[in-house]
Each structure stands twice: as C-alpha cells, then as structure tokens.
Image (cartoon, rainbow, N blue to C red; front, side):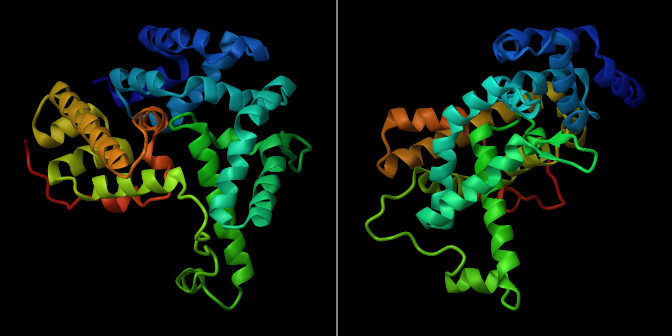
Length: 297
C-alpha cells in the first residue's frame, strides 16, 4: 500500500494506471455528445475518487472507477452544466419514472405530481447568491443508479414536507397514524419497488456475522480491502474473493425471493442489473450493522 501522502497526490494527479483506468471509461460515457472534453471528464471522475477513495490504495481506486455508473454520471454533469440536449435526454429517460416514484411515495396522484414537479427546478439549476446556476444533480456521484438516487431525493423531499407541515405533531406520530404515508388503495397493484425492498430487507437481515462484517466494512464504512485484510489477519486478495462470493450470494438470495413473490425472471434480472441496495428505502446500516468484536476467518 502506498503511503497516505502519496495517495493524496495520486487522487489529484493520477498514477499512470489510474489515469488509464479513467481514460478507458471516456468512450462509454457519452461525454462527446455533450461537448465534454477528456480533461473535463477526468475532472468529474477524479472528484468522485477524491470524495470516496482518498484513503484507498491504487487497486481500490481503480476498482471504484470501474464500478461507476459512468454514462449516468456524465449525463448528470452535462445537465448541471446546462446542456439542453442532455436535459432533453434526462427528461425522456427519467420524467415518467420520477412521477411514478413520487406518486408511490406520496400515495396520491396530485401530491405525487407536485412532489416531482417541485424537484425539477432544483435539478435544472437555481441561481445562488453569486448568480451562478447550481444544480442538485451535482450531488449525484455515479456510485448507484441515477433512478435510485432520484427516488431517494424524492423520498427525502416528502419527509421534509411532512416535517414542515407537522408543527406540533412529530413525524413519528404522523407515521404511526398513517397520515404521512397513507396505505395504498386496495385496487392498486403492488409496486415493484415494494417487492425489491422486502426481498432485500429479509436477505440482509439473515446474513451471518462474517457476511455482515465484510459488507458493512467495504460498502458502508468504505474500508479498503487491505485495511479489512489487516484487521482479519488475511491477505487482501482473500478478502476480495470472500467479498465477491458474499455479494453474489446476496444477489442470488434476493432474486430467489423476488421470484417466489411472483415476479417474472426476466424482470428480476433487469432490476438486479440496476440494483444498489443503498438506493432502496431501507436501513441498510441497521440490517448489516456489526458488533465491535470481529472474528478472523
């Protein structure tokens, strides 16, 4: 592992290997259609590495770059920059999904449309005190799906609205009373998201201690493979293989639960291809939280 000081330089300037890893993703990003140069592209990706991988070794930095939803990240950055064709592409791809998600969250068509429409201005960009347009899409970092990130933002907006309207009644009391999130009408079809959330929640809850530690350490605490390996007294390659097997097993269990709920196999595969459980409205940290004591493998 490189010394911490060297890592900081690597993030800002890039080792040859890291620069090459970033460069290889340029072609698949769609950056050219929005007039985004290679240098601008490298800046966008380095900003993500700076935020999430400043303490990573080179191997983990490269793995982070390879894992990014790069086309969605660049679409978000192009929208933030005010590129009209990017905004048109964004609306064509996500407008209907945003309204659908907002209506599911608000449990009311009119309230859902208001919730979704209220977010558009923030996504397109509002002027700050200096008159510079600032878009909320700047906060999307490409680590999960853009659709999932939008659902999370909508859900938070709904919660914020409930809190602002609550005044003397707490949000928890409203939730218990069914005011903030009213039950779905009996004639409404169960949302696909509900099936996924249930399957993911149940699967995470049944993980054993070893699986919980690996997933929590790597995905929630953002520890490097080398750091986890030192804590467990094994080589980082062993951690990598273990983590790969656990991740594959978790996705398999989630798929089995989705199938058992009656979902079509092809639809399951489509959802799992896009799924990042951090985008779902579940308490991932609570489901895979760890005790302080850690046993070696």
